Length: 590
Ligand code: OXD
Ligand code: MN
Image (cartoon, rainbow, N blue to C red; front, side):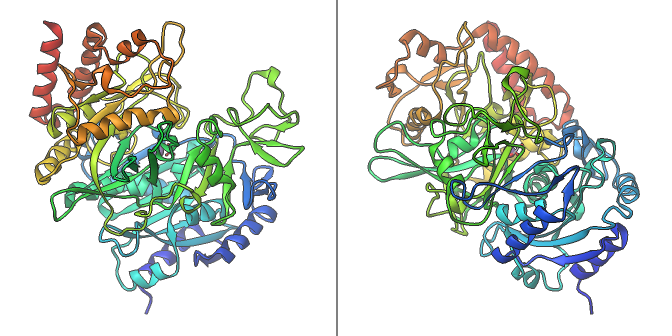
């Protein structure tokens, strides 16, 4: 008799009508085969799905060019379909589940004709972890199948694990005909289902990532008492060999991957990578907060990545390890057959094809690599991989950092007074937008806990859930905000960032261990300049003071925006957060 999984696959095939159904086993041999298919048979527009790069300098690396209209997450086409609109909240696009399914059924009818349907069984999280989840995604493009093998633990064993159960998480994906008017990424949280059509790009198509591990998982976390967050997980080893585990929430393209693989500018410190994008946070039996990274790969922004900004990432990309490494919408150096992007090491190569495969010249002003061009690479190739990466229990978290990209107002680092004040600190976070999503770049938007595009339910309820998690913790982590992006009057970044960010992490660890004091201000605790190790940096003291000052005028304007943002959530905004907001506003106005 067919299992629920087999029946579900049959039903989706009856709708989408592929020529062939292929069950992935997740093996390396299979990845070779799928890449061959992508290089020879499957096409997107005029290009083959994969193009082989120079394997002497970039072992196992392939270039993928996406459809030119399909280069970033499309938040405006992403819906969370709870039966009740208020459950989705003003932070999500919403349709009733019935309406959404009717629309998608029409668009999906026959969408895989002439193609292969790949069936991908995968785990999010280590299979032995009590927090891991069994999932199955269907897709009609080899790029997504190969990417999912890098990003998740894909394998036949997941089918055995699901066996006759029907509570596995389901993802139906088709690139359709790439028509942006027929592109939708729909979530059905109560059914554990994601249905995505019309896009082959990252977060729209690799459904284990944003769709499942954040939007659906955040909803599961609300029901079950845990958190799914847009966070890096890292271990900072001090010169005595003690490792402190920290999570860091930042919006897309704000340097999370660089932070996760930071090469310390301070001698004796070392950063160990556990994750660069997603953390699932659970309350442990000992009353501490434990984090696992449900993913196994890094889907990072290529532009700006170099031996100067992130040497560990360059080593990861060039490692001859877990197969393969993919570049999406990078430029191509025709002479050497190597990928290239703005901000990479060395001079700009002479003969470049741009991200669409057309000859490129700097005189046109357009970038050669797409600003949101990406790499997809296994975390197992990273020289900084933590020995705790595969620990099914996760790592105990001592500090949570909630940050954003802010050229003005927000200090370099602020510590919340306690967990509940930390929830307010996260809730009031804003960030200037980047190319990771299809919208205008550089506009300030509120982005609480960097979750505005990813929270699968009403964000008012989300703040309440954070407060509840705090009550469940005997040893809550300390909560901080950071901002690496302040600029001076000439528009230059004041803080050097990258490997120098260890100086801020060091201050945070010292605060966690109650080794140093801090200055109390209405917005939180900020460092005494003397407690920041600035040895070897040439930033004038006046500029450091500026990074640590409380700009009262700026904060008053900030709180006006925060009040406006919070008011959208009406009564779903916890009274306690509203009160903290009022109290801070009053203090700033005296
Ligand atoms: C990502 C994103 O791809 O946040 O991680 O956009
Ligand atoms: Mn992300």
